[in-house]
Length: 211
Image 1 (spheres, rainbow, N blue to C red):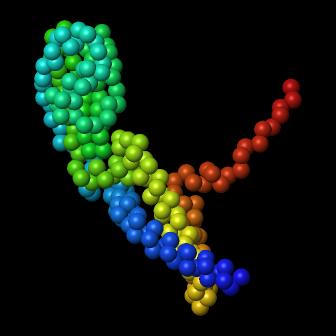
Image 2 (cartoon, rainbow, N blue to C red):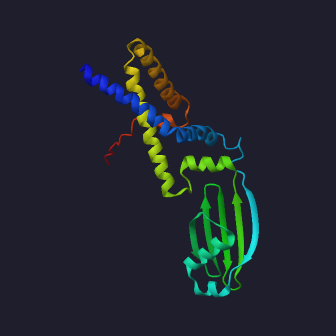
Image 3 (cartoon, rainbow, N blue to C red):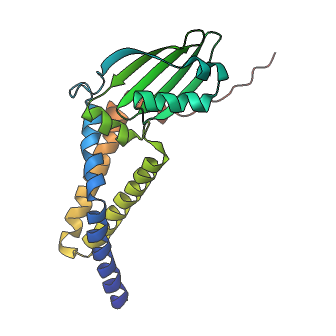
């Protein structure tokens, strides 16, 4: 039993060190953005720089109504690298949208003339990292980064818990701190978060009415 505990302790220490170092950048990123997301107005993360421009889409390209070629033309002519989020064909125009973590494009192409209106919104660095925190407009690959980061954080906590258990002199104090943090978080939710009391109420009981 003692040998197993020593092996578990050694494994936990190794995993704790190297998993933490492996994920230190993303842990730091999500730690910082946990604050900046909560105070977006402080960092002007919701105030974009808006640009309105006009362009001309070739009429022969418009007439073919080839969505793929239209989108590729816009990407090349407007230097757009973001993911397409919408392509609508209306009676008189095409409406196409692109979004990335720090930019939004809304483009309208007139079917009759090829006149193109480009509405572009560019957000600052804090908006970029906030949207990366949320996984908004960042694509499937970044969602994998978020998933892996979550796993790394959980494993770092779990291995840290094992290392703490190996320190008998600090175990009781650690339990008190753990309970304090847990109860403090729960009480904050139950007492101060609006609407949380609704979740504590028992479900309504249906009462049958006899005629």
